[in-house]
Length: 63
Image (cartoon, rainbow, N blue to C red):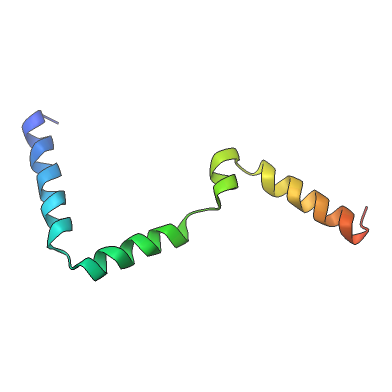
């Protein structure tokens, strides 16, 4: 992709974003935020989940 094509693409995306009403931009941002995985899972993967499940199981009196 040449520099000219890249600048054209970025400009098109920016104009498309700015043309949207403010409410639509906020709704889109909120929807993306809700779809994200929890912070500990994003940073450290599945290990925090495994540890928390292990401690919950011990609390209930499981094995």
